[in-house]
View 1 (cartoon, rainbow, N blue to C red):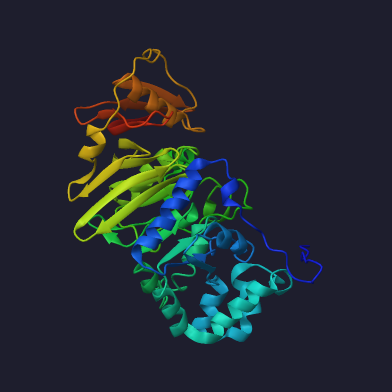
View 2: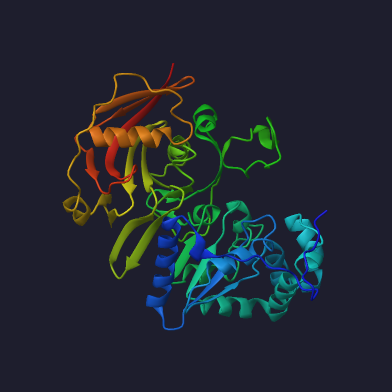
Length: 421
């Protein structure tokens, strides 16, 4: 029932992005960082946008081309869709229409987005070697938001084997992802084994049901779905995603959707030690140069580092914008420059002696942790339904005020434990 939108010249009207009109300065900060990173890598930087996380990747192509339209950078949409991945590797480019329907569930795209479909067919006709070379010549790549399980379909075939271009993607100097495009970068192997890719779930469902190494339930499913899952069940891909980030499991929309306990449960169930939850309008920057590895946080809010000790227990850290994190064989610690430049403590009333309610909804857990940090509180108790959350400062817990925002207090190693009652 979707109608094509044409201008008077019978050409498709494209979506336009006016970045200079945004009222969210944190978005501008992140985009400026991406542009600067591209330009420091080469004199003629290029970036390719992959929109495979969308059910209809053609619909989101306009937006990402506009978003990545930086001065001095050549940006373009890469028609790397699940249909193209199947067609180009099996030399079935003439069957793209049917593959689009069968593997992606989209119809009549040649009428709605004729230019995008034409570009997809042209790329397919040039073959695998050309696609690999195109990616090898790119400075950076960006993966869009949506469903990370869909993006995984353009990285691995139905048997879980890497496509010929996946290695080339891993070698790009700069990889950028938003939402699902961040989550899909978890993968590869580390000292704890294979790094999984999270694909669905809420904290409450994770604590009640555990995790499932199966495909995520359909967005359309209600109550009980396939494999006896609910729409809130925690699911993951055991073999992980792209594998550009091997430190641990990446998660997104983190504090706003209160995903700390779902990430903690996944770590406990899979034997991984570290998880990294990126808040909205925030970026975790992982830098590797020579023998040096570090991370920093830019944007609006912060990043939660989750360490799992056992089911529903471990430690959390909160890294606000401006934080620098040293990455060593011993783990992830606030850099000396961050600690040395911390702001003076402020005097605010202590936390009330009460049990905080509905803690696993909205961003309430982040708010409580920030309050503990600002008041130098050593303990807090909260609950949600049948769950009781204990937060305790130990000898390894540290608080530092990094910036003056409402999420500007850095926390290191705050112990948590969840019990049922």
